[in-house]
Amino acid sequence: METGKAGQSDFSNYSISAFLLIFLLLIMTLLHVNGQTSYNQHIYNAFISGKMDLWEYNMNKMEEDYLRNRNIQSLYDLTYTFYGYIAYCVVTGDEPGARYYIGKARQNIDILLNYDSLWAEVYSLKGAIYGFEIGLNPLRALEYGVKSIKSIKRAAELDKENARVLMEIGNMKYYTPKILGGGLKKAINYHERAVSMFESNKNELKSNWIYLLVLTNLARWYSEDNKVNEARIIYKKILDIEPDYLWVKDYLYPELMNKR
Image (cartoon, rainbow, N blue to C red; front, side, top):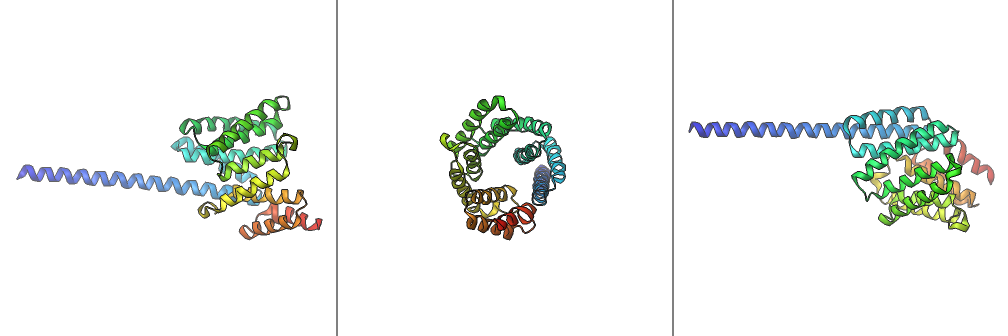
């Protein structure tokens, strides 16, 4: 009997220890998810307000967090914030900043593809990073152009209906001359498809700066194609989603209205 009681006691202690371990792991997971959600919200706020100092601050915090936990989703989210910041550096002429974060993004992409060699969105991201390289290295434009196209085509082979893949195909078509298979109308078509795919998953729309960026580019390209009414509809849609999106609210939409 004593042996039985001791066995029951050992089993109970084991059960309690196992429960506590699972509970602690759950708490740690929830804390990580909440922390990542908070970072993504801050990045979204920086995007709509145009406060790139806020973007950079939270991007660096995200990197610190990743270096502590080595979570692959954290790395994925971080690399997309690099993508956005590189675009900002290119537009504002900050070549050293663009080169620095391109280097970091490429390292991250290697890790992500080592984790999952069939990750379509990461291949499209890789193609986008090569696209940034073209503007920074004109003498190697052909080399980087080929690498960009190859990466984006690989992404399309893996998942041709993925919203982020469609976005990058659209970007590629926009910057590719019509004679080489690109052009404005093809870019518009792919961004229209990207919007549809984003909107097919309502859970991904909340505070999603990439979705807003695709809508913004689609409206800009409609305007460029003299489709003023279509552009107006998209800008109104954007402001219905996010009334405080300053780039559209204070510049792009008023500019379009002045064209009429």
